[in-house]
Image (cartoon, rainbow, N blue to C red; front, side):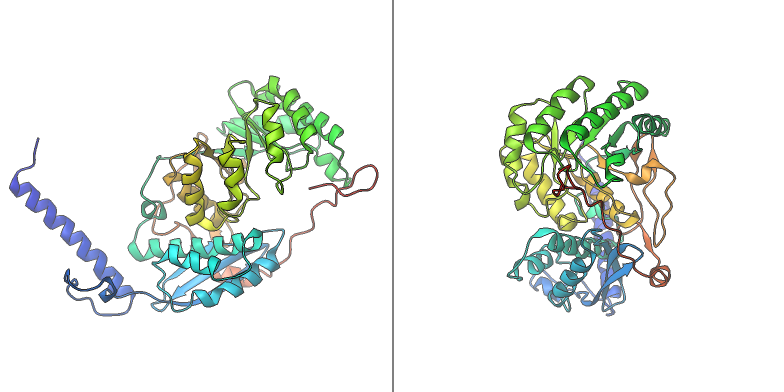
Length: 426
C-alpha cells in the first residue's frame, strides 16, 4: 500500500531532522558553532571537518596499538600487533605518521592509499600491520564521530551473529581430545588444532613424524567430539607439497572442514600441486598482507577458504576489498585472528558486514577471557559471537593501564631443525 502524502511528509521531516542532528554533532566535535546546512550550490568542503592532530604508536605488554587524536580531542584506537616484528611495525608506523597529520580522518580510503602508495618501498608484514592499526583507529574514530558501530559504516549487517571456532593444544592426542570435549561443552561447533607441540618443545620437526602425529590427534579428537563438530587441521605452512598431499590423503576419512596453510606461503603456486591431488578443502592467507598477495590463490581457485588477518592485512578497509575480490570466485573468508580484545573487535565488525564469510577465529572463546588494556571481548553464545554495540569498535582503551605496562618483546618461537640439523619452518 502506498503511503499517504501526509505520511510521506512526516517521514521526510523525520529524516531531515535526523540528518541535521548528525551534522550538528560533527560541527560540535570540530569545535565550531553549528549553523545552517550548506546549500546545494556550496562545495562539500564548506562542512566543518575534523583534522588529525597526532598519531602515536603505543607499545604495552606484548601489544602494539595505534592512537589517533583529532584537533577536537576525539580519539580512535587500532591494533597493530605483530608478535614476530614489533619493532619493525613501530618503525613503519613512525614512517607513516607524516602522511596523516593535518588530514581529514573521514577520508579513510584516501589515507590508506596515501600511507601505502606514497612510500616507494611497501608491502610485506610490517607495512600491512602498521596500516592495519592506523585503519582500525580511523574506523573507530569515525564510528565515534557519527555515533554508530563500525559495522553500520561498512554497510550494515550481512548477518546478525558470527560463527566462531576455538583452539586445542596439548602434548598428547589424549590431552587435545580432552580439551576438544571442553570446547564442545562451551557450545563451540568448530575446533582447530595443529599437533606437534611436543616436537616444538624439542626444537625439532620432521615431516613424516609430524604427519603421523597430526593424524593421531585428528583421529582422537574426532572420536571424542563426534561427527557434528567441524575440525580444522592447522599445518602452519610447515610441509613440502608431497607431505601436504600425504597428510590430506590420510586425513580425508576423518572429514576435516579444511587443512590450513598446508605449505609455505612464499610460492603460492605450490598450492597448485596440492590442490590437484586432494579434494579435502584447503585454506591459506594469514601471512598475506594485502589483496595482491591473495591474487594467485584466488584467481586459480587453489583454496576453498581465504584467511586474511585484520591486524596484518592492512586493516578493515583492505579486508573488505579482499572479501569482495574472493567473492567473485565464490571463495569465502574465515579470517585469522590471534589478537586481543581490540583486534578481535575489528575482526567481528568486518565479519558482520562481509557477505561471503563462514566464521572467524576466536581464541577468546576457549575460556572466559577478560580484557586488560582493552575491554571487552565479544560475547559468544552457542558458538556465535554477538555484535559489539556502542560507537566505533565498541571497546574501551585504558590509557593509564597501557602506560603502566612496560613493553616486553614476545619470546622467540621454537628454532626448529631437522634430524640433520638444517632449518625447518615454524
